[in-house]
Length: 170
Ligand code: ADP
Image 1 (cartoon, rainbow, N blue to C red):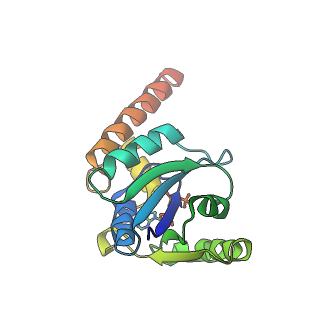
Image 2: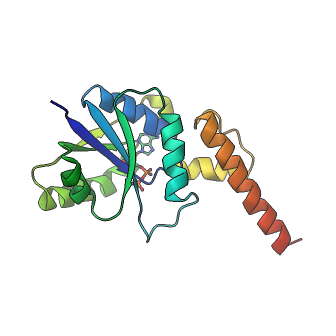
């Protein structure tokens, strides 16, 4: 039996917090599908292709992980995959309100699919993709929060942005 767990998210970019959750999910599921949400309403720093590539590289060597992307409703994609559960991470109380609303909405849409929340180990409870992007913009030390391949991409991307800004405001 192949129990599939779907871990959806923006992963803009993937952090050690996300990877911590993947490791935990692998204890429960045979396959964990990391799916990049391709949401046209959400502004992202990295394209879906870039986010997928970073996820693939960051989870290389983790048996049972697959990386994909999807557009549309998460529950529809979960059904398509035959996933038994959707996995989400919970950091601080600040995640709770949004995740609670989303979980209950998804339960109405797809009562057969469970939504499982996992908490990362303590050092990652405050790590977010947004924070790593801001840190990178101001040349902060991002290596402790994201894998080396992601840190490299963040530096390249923020260097482009800084160059653009310099051209606008020399
Ligand atoms: P989304 O836009 O769907 O919230 P994210 O990539 O920000 O996409 O997050 C995907 C999931 O991973 C969410 O459930 C989020 O709470 C969780 N997550 C994000 N960062 C961390 C972290 N540091 N530790 C644990 N879970 C996290």
